[in-house]
Image: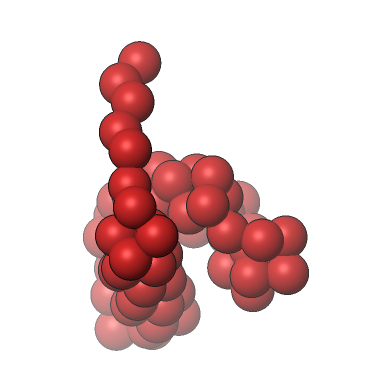
Length: 73
């Protein structure tokens, strides 16, 4: 396990970057033009990024990004 310390400004930036990445992946997962193998890879990455975001986000913010991953396995 690794640890990292962020100051307040860095934490806000990290939060912003993770939210934008989750938004982009959500759009990709709902794109009908992508094939299932691509969507599965995106869903796997989404899960990792979501867990990172869950460590710093409030439950209210987190609920916006909850995704039914079963649909993308």
